[in-house]
Structure formats: structure tokens, C-alpha cells
Amino acid sequence: SSVAAKSLGEGTHGLKGMHLSPNRELVALGAANIVGGMFMSLPAFGGYGRSKLNAQTGGTTPMSGILLSAITLVCVLFLLPYFYYLPKGVLSAMVSVVAYSLIEECPHDIKFFFQIRGWVELSLMSIIFLATVFYSLTLGIALGIGLSLLALIKHATKPRIQILGKIPGKANQFENAEHSPEHIEYVEGCLIVKIPEPLTFANTGEIKTRL
Image (tube, rainbow, N blue to C red; front, top):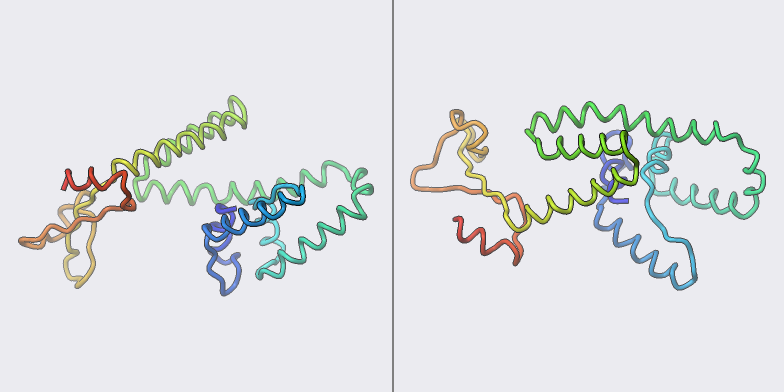
């Protein structure tokens, strides 16, 4: 759900005039599952494929989600026996449309990570892709979750410290000195640092020691 909210809330196909928060999406899903669990309902979750298909068919406001839920409820209650005879090719076509849109976005994402030198993200992407193609989808998902958690723990306990320098000709703009040291100016008698990771009890001691 957080992935769907983040990706579909940006660009030209997002919800018009709305800023989507992945955190609020997860809170809403958690509250819905707590209430639904009291009545033995199925778990609620946000599907990227269905959200993408809804956006591609012209849904641009939250009302589209309400209408989609109402149509789904009517189909489950009254039309489910007739869907038994629906050819699997129709369902495959819907999945293929969403999969094609994901493949379309892949070159842009890879180019972006190359530009920002995100070698860790590119390596993680390659490992998950190869594991999914040559082994199984389950192994790919497990590797993706496990390696992402390890990277998160590493960054949380050992945060990065970036030294910034002033961009020449710009009043209040600074850049990472490690990327282009020859194109920046250092402020005499002042050390400007940037810590990308949030400060928590797990990393404040490490940051203090390194500084």
C-alpha cells in the first residue's frame, strides 16, 4: 500500500490536488484490519496492480476507489458464479497491462539510480531480479525483504555524515563535497555536515564519536 501510495501519488496519473502519505496509508490499513478482524473479515491491503489499473482507466479522485469497492462488492455477492466461465486470457490481459507499465518505468528508475550513484540500490535490484527469474518468486521476495532490512539496520546504526560546501555564485545552496570537491567553496572556520538518516537512540553515540 505504501508503494502504491508513493508511486501513484506522483506524476500526471496521481490523485488531483492531493498529497498522499504512505504513513497514513499504513495507519488506515492497520485500523481497517483491526476493526475487520473483530468480524472475521479478510485482511485489507493495498494492491499496486489494482491501483495502477484504476489510475490508467481514468480514476483521479478518491471517489474512484469508493465506486471500485462498491462494484467489487456487487460482483462478489451476485456475479461471482458467472465469472467462473470467464476465460483466463481476459485476466491475463489485465495483469499484462499493469506489468507492461511497470517495465516501462524500469529504464527511467535505473537511469535515476545511476545518476545519483545508488550502487547499493542497483545491486539489490539486480540480486532480486536474478533470484526471481532463475529460482522462484518466493526467494526473490524473501531476499528483497531481508537485504532491505539489513541495509536499513546498517544505516540506522551507522549513519552517513556528509560534508557540504557552498556552491559558487549561489547564496544559500550547498552540495556534497565528496561528489565534486573542485566545484564547491569551503566556508572558512566552519564545518557544515549533513546526516541523511534520522537521529535515534541507536546512532546518536556513533555520530557524536565520529564528529
